[in-house]
Length: 75
Image (cartoon, rainbow, N blue to C red):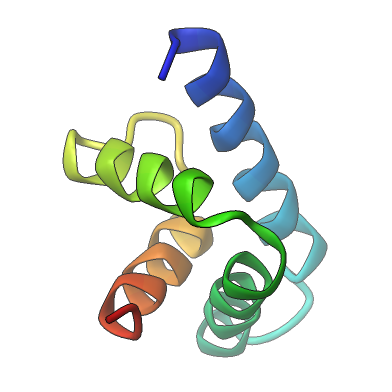
């Protein structure tokens, strides 16, 4: 994926995290993971998880935790 495409995914997942920030960190991370599983296409999820594996620069902490939950629950 291009750098612009990855920047877009990072911005999107960070926006999702910001929108659920009023919840506890644990619940917010769960909501991020649920949103990604429900609304993001599998290639988008694979790209953002690969980005996380590469260091995940710029990812919000809640977004990171949500991605880790997503990874743990993805077969």
